[in-house]
Image (cartoon, rainbow, N blue to C red; front, side, top):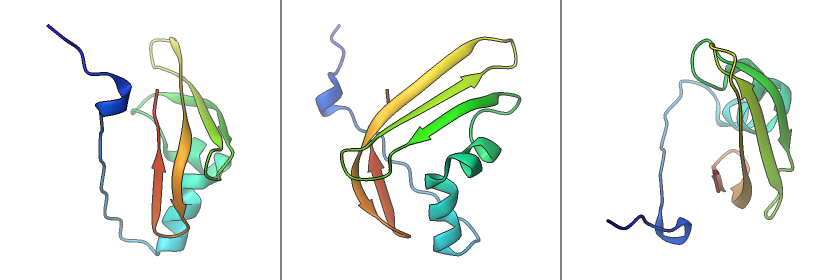
Length: 90
């Protein structure tokens, strides 16, 4: 059994929110706003670091309801304010 490499694995998420685009964009690019809504129910966002520019890095640290600490990180690939964010996720 083979496992796909990062270079050919894609997950595309498209969401529709009943909110103005600028507010949704801000909620996706401001660390303080990200702490308020991101993560599975019951988890705690410990830190968000965002360098929101093409090539910029992001990192998220969280604690699960059972106390496990986890992190996710990536790099921004495409940014069109109020329209589109493309980034890697590891």
